[in-house]
Length: 195
Image (cartoon, rainbow, N blue to C red):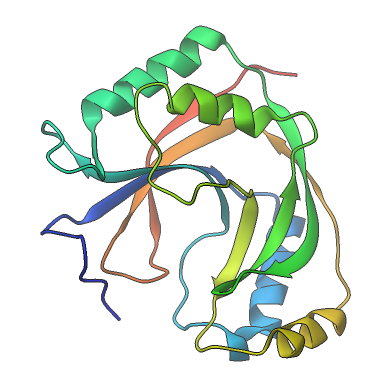
């Protein structure tokens, strides 16, 4: 399946995100993805992550369109974060939930750490995203329209687990815009100070 609208020959769609690397959490998320696989678009090879800030189409040139994001802007964002000397932080997973288009695990950020980074990234670039930010880990996009009761019945039938995640670095990367649920490619990490 290919997205055509708005690409204009561009390929790499950039974002800041948090990689999920904790083995027990990854095992749980893979179990959920398998359990709900009949509902979800396949193939789904995108790594589990928490989107932090959606930048737009990555370009080495001056931005031409409002959804372009230049390397210069990326370097400005890096500089802003490094100047703050921000520390590592903890977030927690919550329940399995559903958007209209996707199944996800909710994320709780009790110290508002994610908001601090989002404000820094927004200083030189308007985010290309929905107006309200809701941190989450996507399990997958739905493969068709489902009745909400059908989804929540499936959610109620599985035992849920909960995790605390220590965030020691942020990742800037991109995915190929023409590939739905395609792989994330790492461009750079920002390591945070120790707690």
